[in-house]
Image (tube, rainbow, N blue to C red; front, side):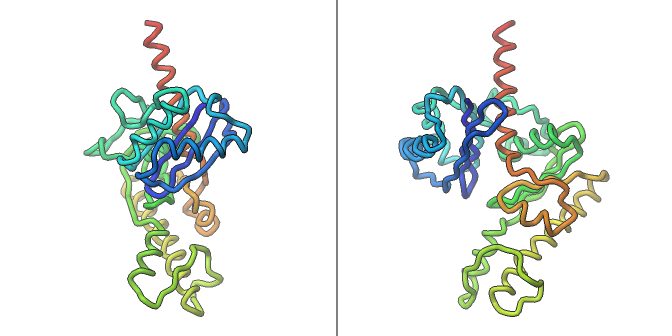
Length: 264
């Protein structure tokens, strides 16, 4: 079985693949202070609830955008899950994604694996919208190359900024309001954030597609993707497992490369 870890700025998602199937999935808040031992206690207990144990894991792969968390996550895999993990972005790790931007080293690991998985499933050219801590839109060519994109504040961060900046505004959850015309403070806030993000996504996608010069198939991923898919025709497909699937693909690609080198 394969342990895949997608460590973002807000949450880290851990999943176990048995062949092509995800047989367990768990989420923790990203905390650079958390040790490998703390991760191991938490994760092994949750795995046990799904009938899994650390000894079942034969390989691991990690995408991480929080450098301070890298050591603990790598130690977790090597100490408790039977081997050094494959880490996206480290020298020698093959992603299978050509990068056509000025600073290839600045592309987040999650964005590369999203491009790989998105192209494998949907072809191209694509625009991949990821509703995470930041809202990113990435363009993938018909050939599967990463072409660049945009980074906007995430919806939760925008809601927090609004609440923190205005003393009388309450903290509210993100959800679709009954009308774009709020009849009280809470519904007015939800309208501004929710419909504002719909407008942001639609506007950016239209400009990106116009600038790229080709129609783009739009894929949305991230926890809030289904909420927005229902409200805009700009999103064509939702794939919440895109990053996890991309991580497995990178692992399989590198395992195949290792076998080829061993046979030559």
